[in-house]
Length: 198
Image 1 (cartoon, rainbow, N blue to C red):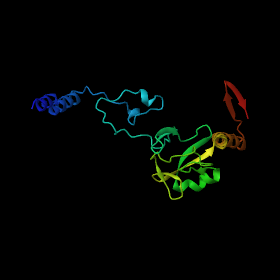
Image 2 (tube, rainbow, N blue to C red; image 1 turned 60 degrees about the vertical axis):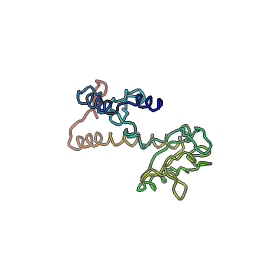
Image 3 (cartoon, rainbow, N blue to C red; image 1 turned 90 degrees about the vertical axis):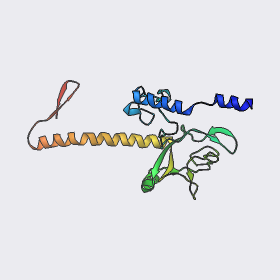
């Protein structure tokens, strides 16, 4: 009987704990999270260093659904191992509607079980329980599939995008100068305080 009395004495009073929590919340002492940090991260801050909200409930913060981890725990062999190879490949989630466009650009499907030309390490996502494996062996997350491109191809595509954007930004200026010339008006542009006539 003495053990049951001791167990009853050590049992926490849940009603008192709940009442204290309600008092804290109602008193306004609860820390709030900044607007840019509602999902646990900010472009200019590391999410691991952001202090937790006092009334935060574990499991309610929305994770970044586009993130593919570099390392994952493999339940089959009971080790944490490398999954993706960020130095060799660039990864992206592609909607089913845009798969053809990305294949034309040179992207390939990541193979769930890994292996040669899979975009992943030897075992890939096998045994990790991450994402879904399609019937064809690809990696699926909702309505998107994971694709990869060699790093050199990805860098070339980024350079092409930069060049294309620069052309788009220059187009209105060129059209403006052409319009001025056709109307007999001498146009100019200013660069570093110097006026250059066209």
